[in-house]
Image (tube, rainbow over the protein chains, first blue to last red):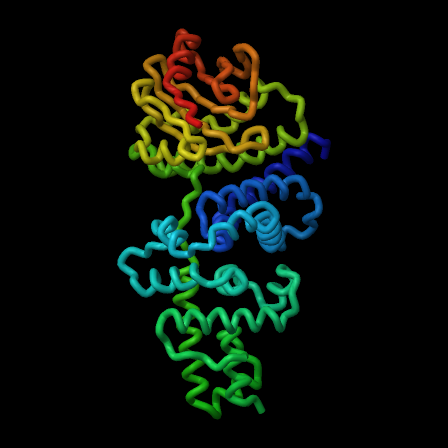
Length: 173
Length: 226
């Protein structure tokens, strides 16, 4: 294969990954940022970074975890400080009301807002576990934490959701 | 054997937990088993809640032509992804490539966008232009495609405007400043890149009669905002 073919193949593989994984990346970024515009920017920047280091991805079956890690780092690097300046959760809820809406499904809408109101420390592992399907061990690796700490955060995330939704409180670990 | 507290800590973090000791406790403690079932049901609700609908801004084409076939829309969506990747390639592998090559490279990888015929809604167009504070006067022609694309490492508005002389692609390049206009004639496309109040603007078409006049009209219709 000549260099041109290699570049074409590399481009095709990257394009294919972007196409299939972008919706998940965008959802993950949105749940991190709680801001549609920021999420779009984070994903765009992440894709640029991913392209630059695409050669480091040796196992494409792990592309999703690789890209999610790039997204969370990009968010932390570029946008988290900006978001910390905007801690008025009610304002964020109002600004993202279109995304939070679940027409005809009150329970989902209530749960969506409850998750939205969780602290990032609890929201992020919950998204990785329930939406992305990662084990607590994998989440610990992605977040650079001990598995026990991830388990504690997940327990507390669900306990807070139960509390927000008026369900029976849970014993603290 | 697991205590109730240990069991609830375990399933509170992972409702799907099914290790032998978890199953054993479930068998012996109906209350804890019921609690785990509730948590599993709650996880189903959490999963539904997490699946928010976030059509990308670059997919405003979903609101485009009612008469366009699904196949064409998919082709355009695919070309957007390919165009993004190609844009990145151009940025990284040919940083000295001319604006002309980059413009034509982008246009040729999104050729399907030129076939769109139904006007976008004002809201769809605003979704693409608002982030830059820009506007486009409607008298210039129907906008049948609008997206925010990666071009030269930046996110830029990409429009298709159906003028009386034919459809033209418009790229608003705030980050690329030029001192004077120049023409493009490559790969069957003709275009003009003009200095703008914010960077530059590229207007490209195929077989567009009196392209300079069309380009000037498009240029005059753009309010570059802040």
